[in-house]
Amino acid sequence: MNAEQFMQFKIGNKESTNGIRKLQLTNDLTDFSSNDYLGYSRLKNEESSKEYLQSEARLLPKNQGWSGAGGSRLLSGNSAAAEELEDLFATQEKTGAALLFNSGYTANTSLFSCLPQKGDLVIYDQYIHASVIDGLRLSYADRLKFRHNDCRDLENKLLQNKDRQGRCYVAIESLYSMDGDFANLPPILALCSKYQARLIVDEAHAFGVFGTGLATSEVTGTPVFARIITFSKALGLHGAVILGSQLLKTYLVNFARPFIYSTALPPMLILSILTRYKRLLTLPEEQHKLQQKSTLLRANLQAIYPAGNSTERIDLKVSPIQIITIPGNENCLRWSKLLFEKGYAVYPIRSPTVPAGTERLRICIHSFNTETEINGLCEQIKQLHQS
Image (cartoon, rainbow, N blue to C red; front, side, top):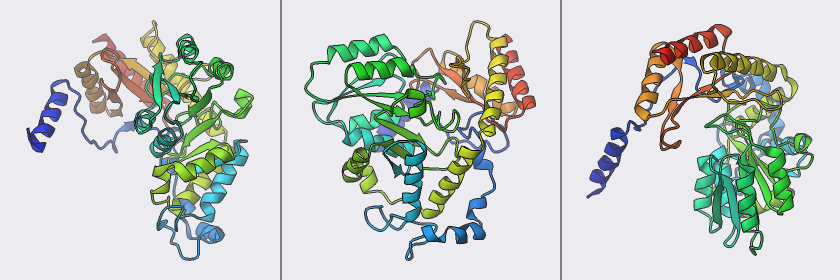
């Protein structure tokens, strides 16, 4: 089988299970699929105005343009803008340091490929993001997954490995992207403390939705070992930071290959991140609006599925990610296509991304979705449910 035959064979297998992926345009549809929770990607690009650039000229390297960094940060790509952003995050999030990465995916693959060593163990939630798994595949550390949000299973894994010579890390998300549910943070933190494991929390979907995350020191009472925050969701931009100690930052600068060998983010983008992060800190009403819309969607879905299909709330918080389980790739894809035809962008999440039999539609709510749009979507779902 040559290369072309191999590719066609693999594509054919996906097509036979209705799992083939295709690029689509959704510009004319009502957005219930993107991660743009606060609608920041729709803001006018005021931070790129001439006046803004002039006011922040102090952050621009003399021999570097706005639109490109020119190299990695260890060569010519560092900037005062990047360092100011990192300092602001470290101060606001009450952590020792912050390190900027080109994306959340790059941040996770960097951290998990270089920190855990041979003889170490990483215990991760079975629904952890693919970027964590890919990072671990590049590591020589051992890895175990525990049942989703199951603290008893996590403790069993910790207990079984408590006499290991290596270090132990536990990896979770604070808000899971596939189910839209929350991590059991307090008991997980307690277990990590009991068994001397370091907790790493991916806050991609919680940052900007619930304050600046669900694993902040104000919430947990003590800083977690590392937090990953991305800018592609609530800030509507690109990039990420890893929050942790100054020691962790120094380690990553020296050993995280994706950081060392990647061209840095351009100063223009970093200034945009700075602007929107400051906006996030001063405009909590946008998050309140999102909570109201999330609550409305959840109430409507519960009226359709009284037995429970949407994600649960925690401490009076309602997830902006709600799911409808529709077993079978073919059936799930059919529902999505019908909603597209009615003008609503709702994507199917199919196996093997999720286990077979748990295929679902994932609905992402935003602060800009109107009550009319939410009610209209739920009416279409109701009709599909009853058909």
